[in-house]
Image 1 (tube, helix red, strand yellow):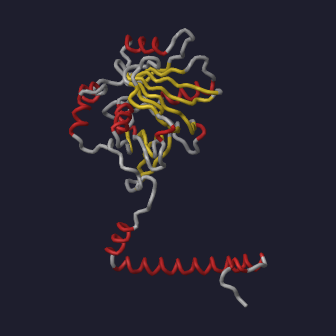
Image 2 (image 1 turned 180 degrees about the vertical axis):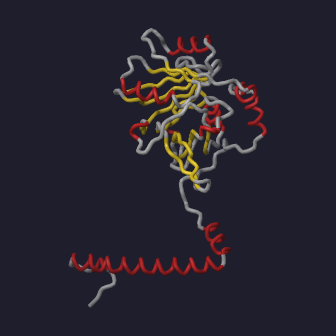
Image 3 (image 1 turned 180 degrees about the horizontal axis):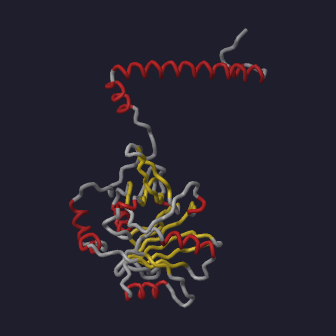
Amino acid sequence: MFTKNKNEIKNKAKREQVFHKQKKEKGKLKLQKRMKQRKEEANDPELKKKRLEENVPSTLETLREHDETIVGEDEEVLEEQETDEFSQYFKEGVEPKILVTTSKHATSSVYDFANEFTSIFPNARFVKRGQQFDVKRIVEIGIERDFTDVIIINEDRKTPNAVTVIHLPNGPTAYFKLTSIKLNKEIRGHGTVAAHKPELILNHFTTRLGQSIGRMFAALFPRVPEFEGRQVVTFHNQRDFIFFRRHRYIFRDGKRCDIQELGPRFTLKLQWLQKGTFDTKYGEYEWVHKPELDTSRRKFHL
């Protein structure tokens, strides 16, 4: 006698046979349903529009917990941004000039990453760090030589593991954890980087903290890109992880546009944001990531 509930079948081979048969029948029904739905929507496009509006997938982003610091067109926030540390770049159009260096006793893998990292920013200069220079002295030299930002690449066990971004002359300073690094040569089908000023895309920096970080990234690039280079730099924030990608878009016969990744590829996660330039002893922290802040998988800070 045939048993509908496969779990009641004691013979393993028979149980698997019934399972695959039920799975196949279920797949046929789903296919028939989809084909019927496709015909109906082809005759009435409003049905498809209604279905897409109703069937919003439940993701961590759509179920995100309400955060009071999420900003839209908030006049108070816009007024603050008029006088913040980056206002000189956005209002006066100061050209970014970036000093990139490493931690002391850097290894070859860090220099390889630093070389490609420096190529991201059009007006960046890499300087090998001497043992006698601490971070405060580097900041002083950067201010003396009219640099707008200092970026320090840190390492652990001969692998780049963190990035410190210091905006000059008055801060702020941000410290990011660095993971998932892929250099240009490790990316299949990668392109060759040109010296053009890239376009910049900043995605999903929605809170006050997120907008501060977004403005910090924006201040690292020239305001007017060179469109003939067709290069695009993207900082995509998703669940407080900032994914960096660099692409070139390629026009095909005037009908289609493809993209080619240039590299490098890496992920940043903000650990702390400090007012002023780097000072771990007396500096005032605007935000510090702590384990107790991660109360829910649906709560994000950027």
